[in-house]
Length: 253
Ligand SMILES: O=C(CO)COP(=O)(O)O
Image (cartoon, rainbow, N blue to C red; front, side, top):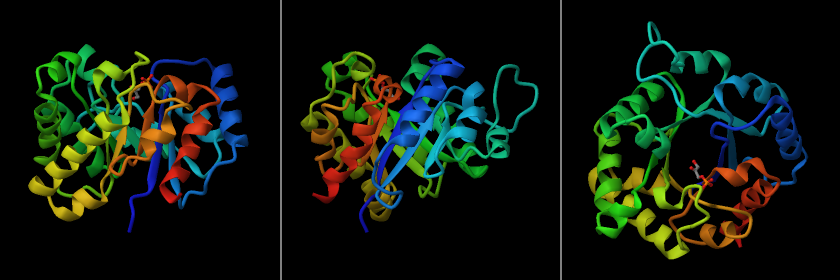
């Protein structure tokens, strides 16, 4: 069985109530392939989760952009996995490079978060990716392997995990990885999963690409055999997100 295409929209720390209503209205009107063909998940900031849940079409799903590493309690400013479950949120993005870089989230901390979120029943979009310096030093594969290893050491069931490969140098820069560059790292990640987890997990786990994906480049990227979808930042707040969702059809052409 093939891997179902996955398109996530990471809204990051953007939006007002009015803007959220506008983008949801666009999504609700969009003509896209059915849920059997593509998983669509949008990730608003925490404060807009209930609003988006109340307005968004039922074939699209909602993700939080982060959650706390363990059971809630005296952790001022944090939101726990249990709270997300209580709200009916099904997905969470964990280990985004902005959190790794700006908030100091280590590989181990990210791995612990992934494990805890899964244990509470959330599905996880786990982000990995190298910086420009790491790429230039030739350590891209080592970096993403170490990030993936810290997750693999802490979980046994990959059914509810999507891995997002997001090269830091491509995020928000307009500098997209070439289809060949994306394919190469996705292939290496899948190989790592095969050698270190299992052939089944390698074959079934979706590895999606993130970093300056837009309506003009998504089809070509989607054409790569190991690219199973996208995690979209800036363009997920625009009508072209619909075109990116529709690049799912490339897989069946
Ligand atoms: O970080 C990203 C998605 O999580 C990618 O952001 P951009 O699409 O804005 O480059």
